[in-house]
Length: 528
Ligand code: NAP
Image (cartoon, rainbow, N blue to C red; front, top):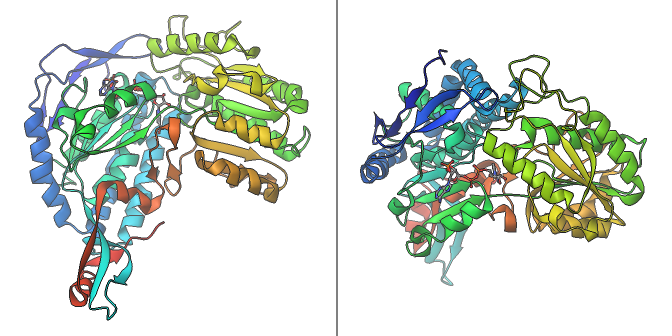
């Protein structure tokens, strides 16, 4: 793939490619500082973009059955697989990620899409989903009700974060397209290239009805103004931006639905039985170090707070630091490098500021930046080495429980007993994921249930699942992704549960014969 001449990436709206005509924003290589491409969304006819998706693509998508739309997902998988090498090259250049980290984004997306292709195939020829059984409303059952799901007759707008330009698009689009709802995606500007290229490949392959998938690169200005009452918006990004979006009339006046996936102070908890020298202790240490360094810690699900019984604090600090010290940081093009850079110079500044903010109350247990030698990357690159902070008395902290530093940074937090560990995890005010480590599977039952009301996912690990567990930070399409409270209150994935956001539920009540007739061309929505 030729990357030598930075091009203006076009937007795909109303079924055609259009170049923005205003000020261009440059996308850069975070390691070399080179300009890679430009984007602009200025001057687009957004009214036409939304109308075409809503009025032309929507009906064409909904004319297909669930099974037929699932087949289209399989075709998208084949198209993405055919162009995988180019996606890796774009990720290396624009996101600064090593191949194994690019895989989390690119192959994670392909796996998620193929999972939905399989799940969707199980819905066969159906055009309607049923929600529960028929319930009589009259003593003689002549009048009854049945709940149905129908695809919302609008557009799904995705406003995405910079850290998952591939997975962030497809984990949402899988559910929307399967449901029969056209998609307009606005990727985060700094890494928009990969999203734009994937959309271009899928459009070129002619898989979907025209206008089913649009991409707008650059500013989000004007997008929410076009959101109508039957449209849905899925936002992934910071809590601050989410708060701005939620106040928009699209939601406050027109009652469009919004799903928010925001910041999260995820925890990993070493249970009291998992003393140093036991297998569960080693699993915990491995996972904390891995989560800090995968994608340079730029994962919404990454472990930010690693909680340990205070008597194991020093042993855990030493063991995690030993692992972090082996992390070779630098230019992802060098094969010896294990961790690439952050996504931009701006993110590097934000991470360094965040570390300083936490250091006001936490000690520094390991700082790979002290004598850092970044391989094939200079001090101007966006490279940051891992930093482990520590707070022996977890209850005394404030900042570590409410500040998400979006980089290779975590805080080791001491706790006195498991009730205090649960309480400290909940000081995150609602998180995407918490993980538990014990040598005794059943001992994790009580904390798992105590934590479930504040976490979208509880990931429990003991030595029996050392080889099979899917990882604290890996989002599996079969499991719910999202979290209450501060994490945004959103829900995504979770198998076919994902369809619900894109569908309208209605109670159809009438004569028993009508209610029975609703089952034609319909299937009960399974929960997995
Ligand atoms: P961000 O600054 O909030 O930006 C997110 C998206 O919103 C970008 O596309 C951005 O566009 C757009 N945006 C910014 N201001 C806007 C406005 N006023 N109106 C409409 N759109 C606007 O977040 P980020 O820095 O890209 O992402 C990092 C954050 O995302 C982290 O806090 C992380 O925890 C969170 N995250 C959460 C999940 C999850 O699933 N829960 C996943 C990934 C990331 P521009 O890029 O053009 O500014």
